[in-house]
Amino acid sequence: EAKKAGRNQIHMFNKDLQEKADRYLAVYNGLSKAIANEELSLHYQPQIDLLTKRVHGVEALLRWTSRELGPVSPGEFIPVAEDTGLILAIGDWVLSAAVHQAKYWVDRGYKNFVVSVNISAQQLRDPQFAMKVIDLLQTARLPARNLCLEITESTAILDLDTSQRLCRELTDLGITLAMDDFGVGYSSLSMLNSLPLHYLKIDRSLVTNIAVSQRDSAVVGTIIELSRNLDMKVVAEGIETTEQLRILEQLGCHEAQGYLCGRPMPADDLTRFLEGK
Ligand code: C2E
Ligand code: MG
Ligand code: MG
Ligand code: MG
Image (cartoon, rainbow, N blue to C red; front, side, top):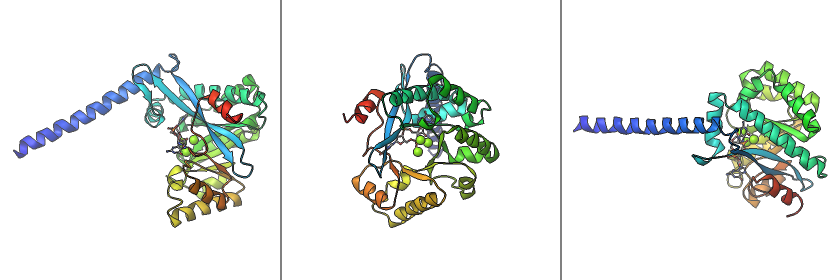
C-alpha cells in the first residue's frame, strides 16, 4: 500500500513538472515569434503628481496576446524572456514603441510628459545600451527629459560599478532614472547613494496594508523621508483605496500610481484620459 501511494505521488509530481515544462516551452516558443506576429502592445498607467493633482506621466507596461495561448501576463512571460535572452529583442521593441508614443503626446502639447519604461538587468549589461537609447531619442526626436527608465534593485546590485557608469551616462543625457519595486528584496542604502536616481518607486506590497498597519506606514514614511534627504522623489505603486492615498499624501509622497488613479490602458484611452475623457 505504502509503495503504491509513493508511486502515485511520484507520478503526480512528474505530471506537475511535465505540465510546467510544457507551458514554459509553449510560452518560450510563442514569445520568440511575438514581435514578428505583432502580438505585443503597450498599455500605459497614469502617474499623478500629488501636489498639482495632474498627470505627470505614465508607466509603459507590456502586454502579450498570443495566437496560440491567448493573453499571457507579464508576471509569467517576462521571467521566461529574461531566462532565455528574448528580453533583449523584446526590450528594444518596448523602448522604441514607448519612445515613439511619448513623442506623440509631447507633440500633442504635453511638453513635460514623462513615459517610464521597465528595463531588465540583461539590457543594462548590454554595452550598446546607452548608444541604443541615444539613437532612439534622436530618431524619434524626443527630448531625453520625456523618458524615464525603471531599473530594479537586483539589476543594480549585479554589478554596481557598471550600473553606476551606465546610469551616470544616461542621466547626463537628461534621462530620468527610477528604482522600481523599492522596499522588497535587497535594499542597499549604499547603492541608493552611489546611483544617480531621481525616483524611488515604493512596491505595492508596502502600500497594501498602509491603512491598517502602523508598522507599514512607518516604513513608507521613513522611505519618503530618506528619499527627501537624498534629493529623490517617491512614487507609490498599487494604490487602490482613497484611504491609502490619504495616508500617502500625509506622509509627503510625491506621486501616485495605482488602480485608484487609473488602470493601465491602451494609448488611445490614455489620450482621452489626459483630455478629461
Ligand atoms: P512593475 O514594473 O512593478 O509594474 C507595476 C505592476 O503593478 C503592473 O503589473 C501594474 O499593472 C500593476 N498595478 C498597478 N497598479 C496596481 C494596483 O492598484 N493594484 C494591483 N493589484 N496591481 C497594480 P503588470 O503590468 O502585470 O506587470 C508586472 C511586472 O512585469 C512589472 O512590474 C514589471 O516588472 C514587468 N514588466 C511589465 N512590462 C515590462 C517591460 O516592458 N519590460 C520589462 N523588463 N518588464 C516589464
Ligand atoms: Mg515598473
Ligand atoms: Mg518591476
Ligand atoms: Mg514596481
